[in-house]
Length: 502
Image 1 (cartoon, rainbow, N blue to C red):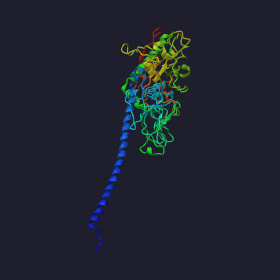
Image 2 (cartoon, one colour):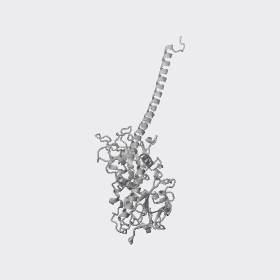
Image 3 (cartoon, rainbow, N blue to C red):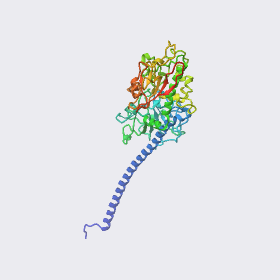
Image 4 (cartoon, rainbow, N blue to C red):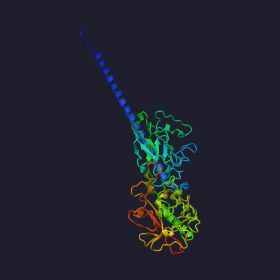
């Protein structure tokens, strides 16, 4: 008899088959989920490893900037960063001896060997790349100090500046982890090398979003180069991006230098030595005359504030008696009776072996202000921070028949009251305390803030510049003042001028 019921064994078989199917589907879902979690975890781990490598490179560069001046070959050169390794000229990992054009950004491989550290690679096995701004390059003759800005900006995918919109915030250096090739990047690797030596092909390593190409610099002098940063999703863009990089700002470098070196002490020594150099100049000519100062505004010159040769003395009748400390005194020398000094005042023998009055020998070695001396190199890099006020009675005068001297009534600068007359005053201006970034006009759009004396000299002394009469009264010892002042004394006829702190 047929009942329509299936045998029990068949039902059991169908149930087992269904259970197996469910288990297979569940395992497949679990496997897919785990694979996705694994991919995310791997990506997270790679980013973390990349950040660790980049931080090591960043720390090494800042350490180099701090310690550079203690190297025998770089005495006095504070804050410099190494050149990238950009060609086959030297051993792999060493910085290039030639760091590109004077006023342009430079990019290449990270010079790990020059800094005495182990090679650094990103998780893909690619060596790090590195870009540096002109003023910070090791071979650069430009001025470098705590006011020196970078020439880089970081932009987003839309081209908006997200780092470096203000001159003082522009990065001075960037370190790149290029990661795996994306899109059409075609890299050529020399298997006999560590990093591949793929020079001239950096855009095969660095990203290009169609507007900004991280691997190509403009090559134009004093021009800002922009870089676009990868995001968590940018690898899937039409122009995929996977560069990860870190930046170094001037504040990162100089806050460390000012905290960990004796540069401020050295700058005070330079200021005092500059005053001694002036006193020696006066004592060496017939009537103790002093040179005129240089102009406050040097923007009319090419690379205006960068080069020593632009700090030229100007007749006080044309610009006033208070200005910048002059390097070239070629306008004063012909008027000063008995002057036998070179036009480049700091190259004179008397300026190469100075015992500071405030620190008698042998406590400190003699100060050498020549371009090759430690203090001369420091002056070169901080020269826009040194100022000079000259007394009318001590200015160059080819009609002089007696020693220059103050008369107690007028014709001389004074400090803290007209009773305290001096032949001249040398100022060193410390860090900016009014929040102004002391930019110069070489970069298009940057203001000429170096020409504004109030951005340097403080506590009412800025009001005395340019001192059209050469007899203004200056102030010292005021609260909140971080300037140094050294005075060249006024002495009776026939007595050599001296230098004192004022």
